[in-house]
Image (cartoon, rainbow, N blue to C red; front, side, top):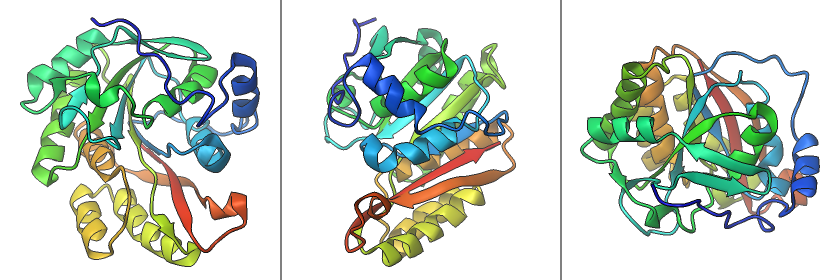
Length: 271
């Protein structure tokens, strides 16, 4: 295993010190939220000032598990199409999280697409920003970080199936949550963004990864993490998922007051 993957957006997307980060997250979670066992999650990855309330609402709803497979989109274009982190651990201001090397190896064994690759993770923020919420709420856990580039439906289903099969083969069935990191529509008027995002959300609620990809194309939805979401849906269904629930939807315009050009954020749980 490689050494620790250091935080690259601490002090930018979220506070860079332990105390300040814990304080910010504390204001974004709901300690009284009704939690449930989940198989999958959709959570946004923008700066916490914009999307933290959505992410906090989602992670407040799930029961803790020992392992989270966290799939993020590739914003940088670096590395392999489906890169799995080789690092021993990932660090944030809240501490280190160990990578589950055994589950990562099983996913690679089951898939002809997922490869060892730290280059795709080196400057990618979409997975890193999920970790402090889990660290604050769920304490001891391991992760399997995977970056997914744009491919196609068959590729997403293959990777999702490989993840589900690896979980079933391990002693972790019912003890893993697959987290898909994604923002929704980018830089459109709020009404238009909400309209487009509703189409994508309906496909996710229906647990229909094929419909999601079709609507991304037909409605021109600039959802950066549709690949991670499609993979997560495929994996969750293979693990027995039957239902999905929209926890919260918001846009950057709700924070800035500028609704002329917003980014949408959706938080969903799958169980």
